[in-house]
Length: 113
Length: 112
Image (cartoon, rainbow over all chains, first blue to last red):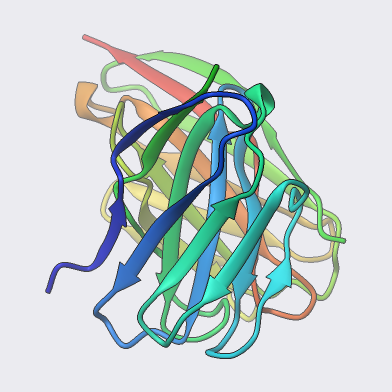
């Protein structure tokens, strides 16, 4: 099993450009999550999908959109990138809601200039 | 919503000493409290977790304690080793039990 995979690993965008971060898991997990990690700020939840067909806002959803494409895939879209969105983005999944271990992907390092 | 506070933000110990990291949470309905370790440049990985019907859990050199009345939980690492150096995050499940809210992290440095 590959676990949780993310693409791309690195990306540089100019202000105003758009892009989609891709995430997929092969563990048949129901719940998937997107976090951003900034120095001294920990892991902040952007959006999550508790089950296929549902999405909900987390702590810092402004400037982002998500799509739960199917049970395996959960994408994060930046419509108009801003320098404040420079961060490391992690996708994670768990079997069901928050009673089980969350498995994280390797992360995407995004720089917006 | 749920809020998780974590202290200290940095912790330096000598090899062989114990390390303690403390977290408080705000939502009394939270019932799941995991701890994650993140080595430099790597993804976070679960090291231990505790559910609200348990007061303490141990796994070799690592233990977690939970005080539901005071709404705080702690990570204890005994006999620290240089490979324990990493950032540690506590988390608590939100009220709906659908997501985790993380603390800001503690950078642990173990010197030999």
